Length: 305
Image (cartoon, rainbow, N blue to C red; front, top):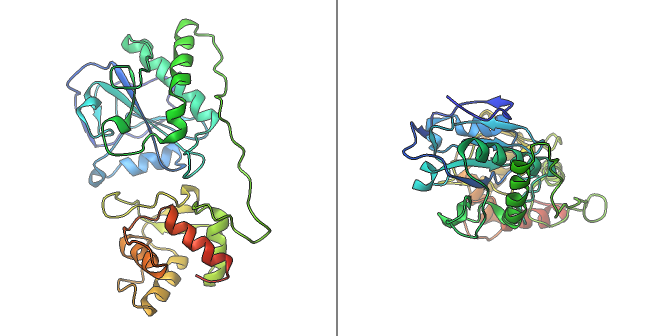
């Protein structure tokens, strides 16, 4: 079994085809659509019910994990291209918008790609389509993955990978496009930006009268088939399935309005998300996405749910 010597964490997923049918000659870069640590990403890929995995994951701290050995095909792109490719999931340090990734993650991505290229005997070649060796998920499925920021950096990634292949002592710089994250609005006023981070969760908890700690606790990992939580910052979520007092308070209010009839279990799942969307008069698609979060933030700024 093989993986890069750059790896610092290993949790092998059962979700793979062993062995892959073809030799490795490409790399497909994905984004996590969340700021997951390499451990949390490993937890996501651990259940067989998830039916998904990647060969590698890179956290915002730059650490690299292996989830599927290189000689095996990970279930990442949802296409036979995965038999030719090593797949890499990269964390986002900004949720939504361009889905920015940290400098540390980007530098580790370059180093990992160079290591893969060196061991499998090819160079990084970005052509803007599937004829190259650096590929995007969106070329094979109806998705925005790898997000606008990573997509914009593909020429830089190819350039830096090849520099490192030519000179093993080359020091990979931080990429262009670094951003500064700032707070918005006056104290206590949320930026209506569609991203449910710590400030939004804390204000939501305050309005609902629960403990204010900025954490939506005890959740399950979305299956990304019946429901999604793309705009809930992953650093604000803990798992375990025991539920959150905040979400229980939300469920009780939605039930009183006739918009929720499920268990008061504290889980931000499909029925609860649809209830929240009905509460705000939105399309009920069970995705806790930007439109839902903006409606929530607008209401919270008015002191209500």
